[in-house]
Image (cartoon, rainbow, N blue to C red; front, side, top):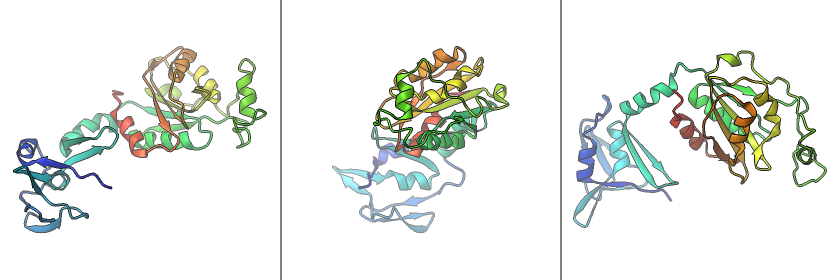
Length: 264
């Protein structure tokens, strides 16, 4: 069931006092209980569900999405906290501009055991126009290796012998690592910590002067202390608070998180 968003007419009049897109409609006509509105003289359905303006307790309530879009405004419904955010498109572009066209060079480095972290990493990289670096073990993990339910599996053996494990990588750093200002580090959570596959990437690179942002994917575990543990392992860099995403993450959520970060 889709959530319908209505707004009090008087409140909307105050709202549209903000700047609107130059291509916005000049005249919008709606009738109570009529699912068709006129936009600059052209009939248009308010939406595909037959939504209409209504009067509730003597107050005129308008379906805000149709009007906002006709006026070139941006409207976002957040299901998790049930909030509605409306901004002028030009304001949105101005706010997003520093993140989209920042002079800072961004790298998304990640290890993905079963493609969950890969999906989140690619969404971040695409959203921020960043480069990617795949942290790849020389000896890849098979599905059997990753079966933590099997006491004899590779991950269990490595987990039980932390002082002896060392995962050699194809490469522990991109050639131009020193050029990056911001580094995202992505990994799956293993036993409440970052997968040890990324240890050599963390230990063998100098993060001095860089902003470092950890992110992870997991079936149920949270980020926990994994970001702080990696920061201690690295010993350098300005590490920000990280983010955990579910293995069945919503790409929109990943993109919104990435674009909301203050990395300038």
